[in-house]
Image (cartoon, rainbow, N blue to C red; front, side):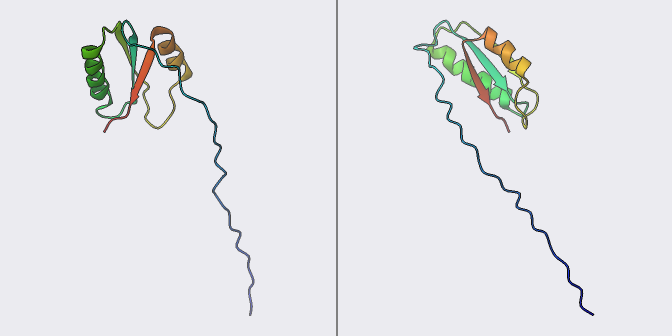
Length: 98
């Protein structure tokens, strides 16, 4: 007895979409700038950002900091979080921890 069956093979790969965004405008100096520190909720991301801020504060007369944690390392930040920090700071630094 012969049984014939077919196997359906699916290809899960897709074509990458490459979008060129360009670079963000860079300020001439950070003097007076309010720095946004956006952590990703991973261990050590907040201490890393604080250390970076401290190094910048030694080099520039910063205008302060706004620290936020986007709450989930595996997902983009909520648009509300992005809008909130964007309205309060001049530049944002993000970091991953571990």
